[in-house]
Figure 1 (cartoon, rainbow, N blue to C red):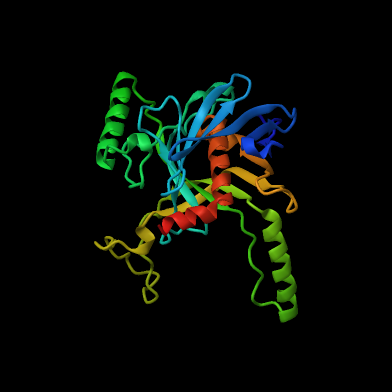
Figure 2: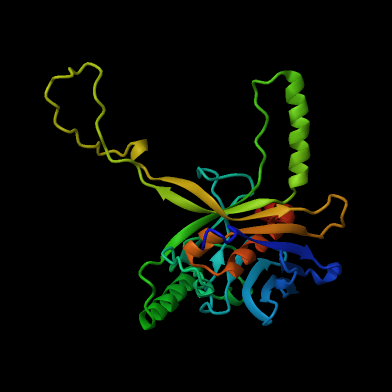
Length: 324
């Protein structure tokens, strides 16, 4: 990407006027042309959604969600082997990256791809080789099989595919976090009157932000190399003491730290509070440099963003299903 090119690619997200269609259009901000659209189908036990490339009418991504009971969100490409998908899962409460309504997923990326041409986006992401999360209930077509059998089949399919066509050795598994945009609360050092005013403003901003969120890559930061600290009682001219090996029990500083990198994508909810329930109006902003660095086609990030937007809108039903 040259310095003259914009840093972000922006897409408008708009729902159609016919709410029964449950169709969401994704338009190029500059031309207002529909690039992708998401349509919904109701199966016997599932809600199935397709992200379709508008100009070619090609289904790029398929999203599976439960129709009534259970909790799962699965994204797959038509090119994936049968039974292979990318699950979106809640971030554990003990995770340092946990926040209210945050979801995470893992995908294979190609981080060394830095080409400036559009061909870099032809690489579709794939899920990790061995699914490790137990999702209940499974999709209807996978119900007769156990999770272990499904994992074995997925691993075998990916392994046989990698043998016939070796993967790029530079590819890796990356983790991503989806989390709502939250405005920081007011400072506790302010006066009572100032805090009251700021709380009201914070409430207003929280309402106006609606379902705004970000999608960020998780970066693992390695700890600095071990170096013994100089004791306070040591003499400046004394000979240096021999290095002390690290303790056998890992210290907190020796543990790699997971941090969120700059967002790959942000969604700004522009939906008016007075619109009909189910209407969507917002803006997707995709970081071009980060997306090119990961080597994943833009339609994947758009599919994940629209899926998470549905999750935030239907979060109440998801929470209810967890209690079943």
